[in-house]
Length: 347
Image (cartoon, rainbow, N blue to C red; front, side, top):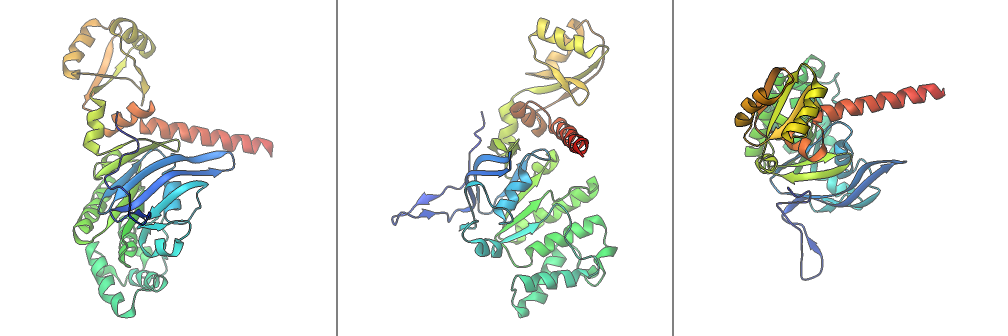
């Protein structure tokens, strides 16, 4: 079982009795957030070491963005504590904000300004010394390959270019922690891969910790460690490889002539617990390549198609939560539609 509270850095207590967070970029303890009767974050604990790329992996509505809002002082926790760059997010908000960069899930650029004007405005808000603005702006815009477009209006930028400009803006004031909330959502796969090339490159240039949220499995593979969050609780936390090793079984998905009968037969005759996920009969077995021939020989229900895969982060998510991340998002969308329908029915 992969611990749901692990960390690379730890806070220690010095001789004067104060907590020493010198090795940590983020430290969270017993954090909760309620909106009326809805508990968006349910008592989570974790820490992020300096220089780490740390990912929050979970479906939409799992509590990822709420946690980032608390860590960036945009929302107050209901209970618990959180420290970013050694500063308390409740009592030292200005100090926290000086030490963080934030790229929101939705763009916050001014489309009627040029790329350079957007960055200069950001520099003035963060008090970047006047003599440092131009060289720093050139440095971060070259890092994301936008220096040649600095005088173009942002409205002429593609979606990927706007995301890269937002990352450059978040880096402009040299933050110690960069928060990326779903940094590539809505972008095509090629642009997503390009964004990650820039993110990995900046880790080599800047002394920075990256904290990101995502619901993309391939994106989470870039992280040094991942915390899987579901329904406001962290259910597992470790490196991507350790998480996948914790599953230990291959995933088999089959399409049959009668899926319900196949599930019942797998349980009765093979002792395998199967369920419908993503439109296919899905189950986990050790040594899947050896099991599939037995399946074709022993299952009375005709098999139309079979897919075998090694443990992935999606398998890890399903192992700890009981559903795939896509199923969880579909369920969340259905719940939201039902809530909207009930609300409209009262009007």
